[in-house]
Image (cartoon, rainbow, N blue to C red; front, side, top):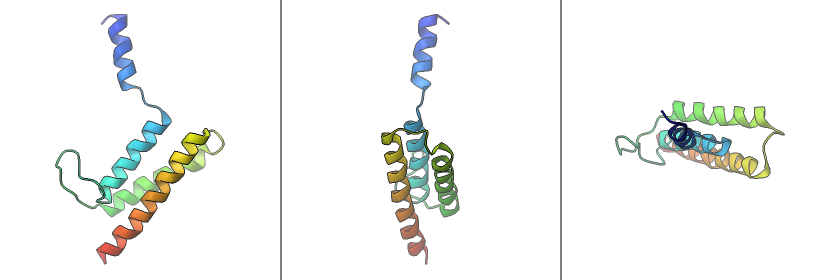
Length: 95
């Protein structure tokens, strides 16, 4: 593998904090039934899995407090707010 192809490969697979958080939030949204599963195209709910992913995002917020820039903090807080609202709504639909 040449140095140029190594560089292209590493650039394509790099992820930053915001991308990581967005990926987790997307997984939670799928588990909440807010988005179709990317492989099946079906909307399915898995509330325990959604709760676990939301809890992971809360853990990340606590462990990174003071180390994030303003945009990252707003992104994480906004995603958590949206996911928590969706979780409560999904629980009410389940009843």
